[in-house]
Length: 196
Image 1: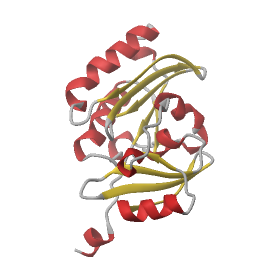
Image 2 (image 1 turned 30 degrees about the vertical axis):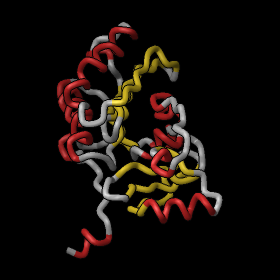
Image 3 (image 1 turned 90 degrees about the horizontal axis):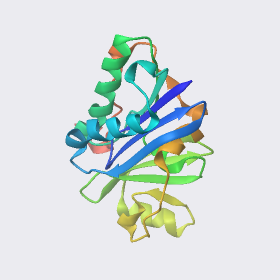
Image 4 (image 1 turned 90 degrees about the vertical axis):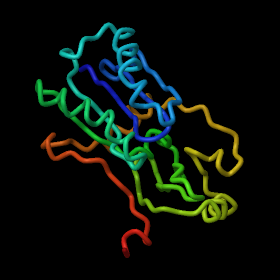
């Protein structure tokens, strides 16, 4: 089973080629606001290293957000086009899970303006999500909650995470897309935005 994993939702481009759960190649590149320019080069490099062609892919796993408006659409558009051309199984996972893997705690993703998308993760599953201020997350950390993802926003040391491998670590959270044409990114709205 040849599995391609993709993420362009946040600040990275992540691509990985796995055959029967074994990583043949992976790419994890910081590309904030450059995902659209860099995506196809990263994908091409990853596929060449694995010695794959697009028509060999059996399934694609991609993140569906939250993240940047444009970033969420890059890998998703590629996957949707490919999956309409040949029968490829398509699955999604929340962006938080590639940062958490099987670890427990809160994954924060920069939502700008002193706010973060915050997902509480336990054993490879997303338990809840919300938008929090950095002050609220600092309080969580002071209360012993393990903070992952963009924890550098709190002054924490940047963690070295194998984002591609975490796609495979959270297999139980994969959600099969039954209709490729109706797949849309997941946006998380704040309480203030919902009231408007």
